[in-house]
Length: 108
Image (cartoon, rainbow, N blue to C red; front, side, top):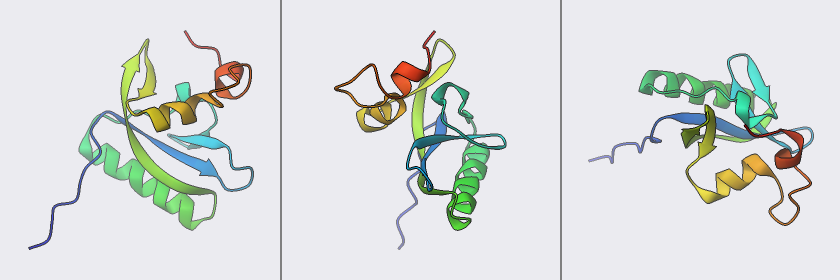
């Protein structure tokens, strides 16, 4: 008997790395953005499946690598990953808060 596929808890966002420059990017309605606050947040399993499929298509087109869904909480209307690794990916280097997304994109 095959094991059931594990689903990412919802709400979720799509996270990946841009193939050209390696920067962390986030799935949107029409592509990808470097700003985590603009990431498309999905709340329904069917929307999560569609977003995951969009990530797979982008990998097949060699636009991004390592695209996967990440479960998030919403804080002040912005998606914040629940797991430390992905949270750090949305911010930038932990030893230099003056660099990376935490310096570039202001938080509400």
